[in-house]
Image (cartoon, rainbow, N blue to C red):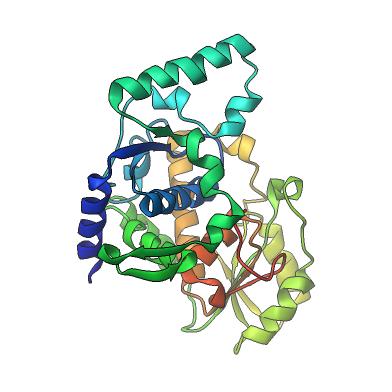
Length: 321
């Protein structure tokens, strides 16, 4: 079936479910942390018969409308303003500096009243632990309406991303201009080299740890580099002169620091996200992606193109990170 037909079937099925989840996108993390968890929550809802509704107003990455700043409209949107403060990742609630009594009133009693009045069964925090459970990564999906027949989770994520990763009329030409600005050969590999504030989150790897498998998988020493620090490009060019490295990172970019980024004006953040999406699309078109599953872009690539086309330095197999 075509993507449009699949979406029609998905929307029909999703709308038939009686229980409802309001999932908030764009709370406090980088885009792919938000997006990956959205995909997992959506699949959890499909498996257990829960209507998935997306709330993306007030997203940190929003220009005006959150999801619809970038993508075609989502079928089930919730715009209730209360979700901004009450539908949250559970650790945000736990780490809140509010008085304990205030937290109990807000997240137990007010949320309970909201759910009762509007017929909502779950908010972001209620199912978070379930769709992020490592056991869920082993799930099998049998949903004939969507063509899922003994379908493993990663095969299902590829279909979900194919259906929903579709740019709108405003974002598509900008992303195409970024993509077309790089002169790539027909065949190339891609590398995601982490920099910026990522040293606080996970182990950093030497260039040789990327380039040894790169030499194995490449047939022409052509590589696209996903990075936010142009120093990476300069050092790779110096250490591996026999390679040709391509990137959308500019010489003025010297590392991404999330706390600084979220303070930028909305249009700057919008354009940076469009460039990020172009970078991701270029990586997805490569013959092999080399990165880490403990990074959200790496986890996303495993979900989008499948582990067969990924070689990750930290884990042999894809996992929920």
